[in-house]
Amino acid sequence: MTGQETRGTLYLVPNLLGVVPPEAVLPAGTIAVARRLRHFVVENAKPARQFLNSLTLDVPVATLRIIVLPQPLQPQSCADLLAPLRRGEDVGLLSDAGCPGVADPGAALVAAAHRAGIRVVPLVGASALLLGLMASGFNGQSFRFNGYLPVASAQRVLRLRALDDEIAHTGCTQLFIETPYRNQAMLDAILATCRNVTELCIAVDLTLPTEWISSAAIARWRQQSIPSLAKRPALFLLGRSDGLTSDGLTSDGLIADGLTAIR
Image (cartoon, rainbow, N blue to C red; front, side, top):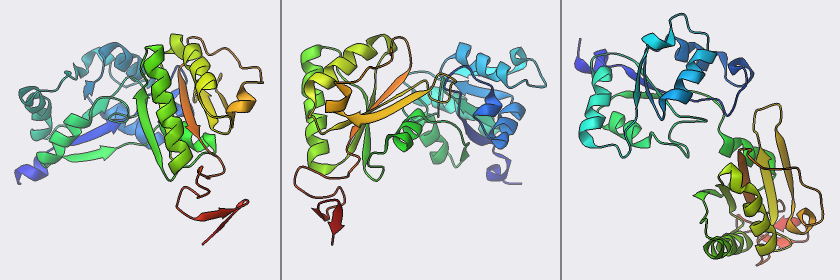
């Protein structure tokens, strides 16, 4: 048997986006794999243990090997984390919420696994970015995740104006997040800065019983009552549901005549 055949598999295990029964969000196949793994590399230990406890494992969570992913990941640490996989043991990579490597740590370890010839298997689960994009009604052919915008108000306004300009000229949907206690300040800045015709989608508490998603033009947001966003995980999306840019083109470059794109 060759070394390649004895190597384990690195499974990318999606975590829940909040306190909810795993079966309500995760496919049975994902849960089954996570339940049989005995070695995990995690973003943080406490959220990882909470998630694994919710899976009702057939062994105590305390018996699992749970190693926190170093940040930044140095070559020696990377080699140590891959050692069990080289010995033939399967390992799960688990972030605090959502999918590892997508707006979360883990990509460096995945890249190292590929370089080492280790099989990488992404498991199906909830990604707030994709769920919000799906629900927004905005351009899903061209989009960008911008992470956190600047905290300082002047720099935040400049960044919002740049994103708004890009939407107007390219139709590219812009996604970003904020620390929950600053959600209202972010919303106030968006409504004060962006064009009336630019559209905003706010997706809050995704996959939870308190989930709330709404999309509308900035001009309409300024006129309507908005539920409290305080201390709630939120995703903000700016875009155009009609796909039109300020140049009269659709986001894929077609000339627009009214609501019809003509080649």
